[in-house]
Amino acid sequence: MSFVTWDGPIPSAAELGRVHLMGLGGAGMSGLARLLVAQGLAVSGCDAKDSTTLASLAALGIRTTVGHDPAHLHEVETLVVSSAIRDGNLELSAALAGASRVLPRAVALSAAMTGKQRVAVAGTHGKTTTTSMLTVALQACGRDPSYAIGGDLNEPGSNAHHGSGGVFVAEADESDRSFLVLHPHVAVVTNVEADHLDNYGDVGAVQAAFEQFVATIPPTGALVASADDPGARQLLAAAAQRGLTTVGFGADSGDLRLDNLAAVAGGSQFDVIHFGRRLGPVRLAVPGRYNALNAAAALAAGLHLGLPLPDMRRGLEGFRGARRRFEPRGVAAGVRIYDDYAHHPTEVAAVLDAARSVAGGGRVLAVFQPHLFSRTAAFAEGFGRALAAADEVVVMDVFAAREDPIPGVTGAVIARAIPLAGSRVHYEPSWSAVADTVARLARPGDLVLTIGAGDVTMLAPGIATALEDRPADRPAPTG
Image (cartoon, rainbow, N blue to C red; front, side, top):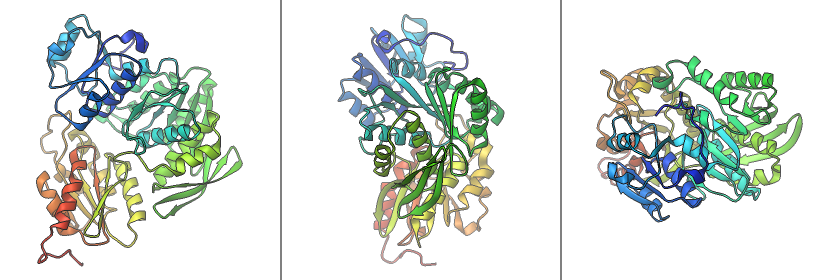
């Protein structure tokens, strides 16, 4: 399914009829299923493996199955697929050859947004947290927004909701250009950097895609974008030339600017200056400069939508993060364990900076799982520089996801690129051996951070067990 060449009409949700979703267990598809069933559609779906996500969807009345089979298409009017479904899949092939309408996920999401004021949050980094923060801010203002997020909000524990309010906030995925079909009334862009080069080729193509995204904003719409980020700043200039309303945000510049930004216990604090007017302080319970900038994006968008700052402040100050975004996963043997989805060098550097602010006098141990062979090959040096901010680094092998291996590209490529003494860098290609490796390295007071977009997130319980079970004759290291 091509998003670059998609030029068909965007149906309304009501026009989809009976819907079947392939890859139902994924973050994007599961959220879409929740939205569609809440709008009264008959929804079914399948995934390659069983999961708690499928169980939660089944509880909503969605018919779920494990495995792909053309028989799933019986009486289905619309098949929705993600870019993770490869060409040649028998179920997809049957739909393309039969009577079912076949839509990319983003087109179906656009259909689910029918009748709402669309706010799409895009950017190379920070999309999930910014979308979550804006959603929480709207909820605190009593607006009951609809939302679709690439991760679960910690408070309601869900990644999507069909609300009664007039605003729909959606995380806009640039990885496959699918954000080009959302046509937002308000677009938020956190930053623009080189990523997904397996799809784009170079950073110029990434920038061009974001320019196309901004071009889909209607003349009465607005662009809210980072004034600190060079790529996003270019978008602000181009949007202003088109006559669109623009709002820049940042810590260093912008129409909404953060002043007196400082780290506080477990989070950060700053003053908000909006078009030259000082609006008062905001304190976040999530750490890191990057989270403060995500909050600035949410505040700038919310103020443009007419939300009152006191209510937004209350929502943001109660925000505890999204799942897998510097998420606390427990304490074992005096060692704190966190997990984060970071999978780009800029993201890894930002989350390690946040970890350092939380670690206090303890060391930071990073457990990093590279995601995709193409990304590992393209950004190995950048990952190496970013990971050097940790005191000890355990590098796992590459999580392949949708790709076939590239000869010579393994986690060792990144391990070799980390400019730390060799005794502080540990390449561990065996997934099952990582927990014991971390237990051998960690000592009380340390902070362990598992990092990556793959199954590294599943390691936290095993690390905790390995720490607790560490033999008495093998004490935690002291040097």
